[in-house]
Image (cartoon, rainbow over all chains, first blue to last red; front, top):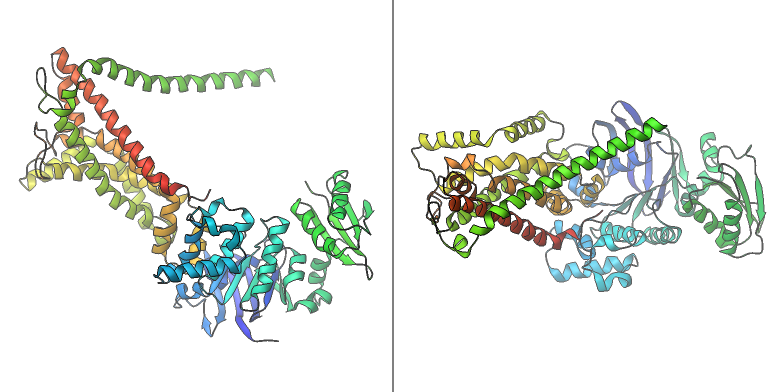
Length: 331
Length: 280
């Protein structure tokens, strides 16, 4: 295993008496993507918020244990919280631009950390907007309100804003859950690019996203860490029964498939269109199995279906060319 | 089923009735003021002083005095109010006894009749053997406006989304930096409304400044001079037995409305530049 960046040592968290994190001890590797997965309410976001101590803003929280970054215990009340947070960029669930112009959103961090020279700030703004691939889209309207950007652009702006304070770690809390498939893909590509220079911790309830991104995986279940390890090991051969169930979709073994469509030989987006048409004729709660042999579709069909609000139960490779995608109709 | 429909229409009728009462009262007030005031509304009213008795003269002293008093009081109250309102945020005094005590005190002050403020100011002036002055009036008006402004601002600041603050903190900002750069920008239109409500209360109040700012036909040239004001001008003019002097009272009321309208529009225009950045 590579170098350790964040060491979480026996951390416990209580929300108004509720035991939200139970004896979490794990080491997060440097310059890799670590995904924290698990069902809703399992403590994923709480763990993430402990790392930059945003959890302090929540009422009635008690913490114990240690989180060491560069040999500094950040849960120690004496540690300077402003410096800790400067080391970590945060990408929130919902794109949250500040009530300022596009330019000011990026400049905000460097400015509060004491940068005054206009030319330096200008170049920082340009550098990080370019890094997230937003520069060409906004360079002519840097002074217009950030809230005028599309959601996907806003999220990239937020990423650039976090990077502009030159952090070592990027914390992402379900960063694509509010975005459309194309914007999600954009963010994922950025994260893959950024892991060369940054340690990334991403909370996600999307198991496929974790599979696409993660080098290291932490599986939380009801506040307990049930499994952690290298991503390929955890995904291919989970040791814990609960992880296996979560990865495969708990009820998949005895799930009743209501309809099967075979879209082999079709390219994306046609297979997606066929899947959508089939889905349209089905009742809520019914289950559709789609067979595809186009690799783009393996990524895009589940993603598109999730964007439509359906639940993707599993994506499995059947043989060398064929994949099965099982989707449950919602809403 | 039928009964429920009847209930629905009765309720709707009641709502429309109350709307008519509200709009009707406003139109009635404006109509009566204009009807009675227009005959007396001439250029002398805005340019002359000493129009309190008999024919002729104007109320320029009262217009300027009122603007001095209300603007001064509002500015003073603004500095105190923003401080208190920002401090009542969760990060600073959240859930402490201090914050609930502060709110209680503000609510009691809000409910205190303005004549009590006036009497309080008067007592202090006598104690220090001072005379009624612009400064005393400004201070008393600031006290009068303080609870209104603070409570209005606090309610607005509360609505600033927690995520916005978290973003600022996550970038390494302190509480003060977050408050000044993010919270105040997001809450700006609401803060402006708070200021305007308080200003309206301040410029329209007669009882609190009657004994503290006094009344004079001269335009004040220093903060230690006594100062006239529009509400008091209206009060004195209305007491006159002469028809044409009473008309001047209504003309003054028109002036008071115009000043409030002008200040409202000016504030809106000033804050428009910033409101476009607000996150909805």
